[in-house]
Length: 219
Image (cartoon, rainbow, N blue to C red; front, top):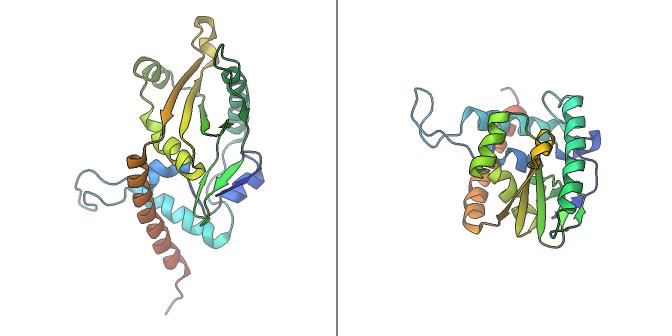
């Protein structure tokens, strides 16, 4: 693996990700149909997976990011929230931890990538979320369910070869009741990673199929 120091959300960061299968989309990449329809069978890639595979294939050919760019205000809010959450996380009483900011980590084959929100000591990562959806916030606080992000976190541990990832949800509006920072540690799950890696290889084959379609010369 290799770490590349580049500001997340910057043009250089977007360029580095072009053509790579990124951990933030691993859940989409491995998603399969769970019921039969007139067009798809159980186990087939979902429409979301198909579209993502085609997008990645297009990027591998063009060498540039494909699709609508993330809106500037979204990136700005994300950077601001991550910065504050990182400082609060480091300063937790009795749990001080120094976080090193990281750019993008790419596997040795230049196929998969993970953009970490921070590296903690030798074995840890952090993944910061600052959701706006109040129902989602309440659900996480009430149940501790972070399954929506599990592929991203286990994928990050897989690519960076680390042992745990602290999920951090930052909600500044909840500061008056001291619930603005929620932290849950997720440990590396080798069985989950092995299954995910197998399905990601199948997804990479799907990307290759789309790339061959795009490259095929007319008869």
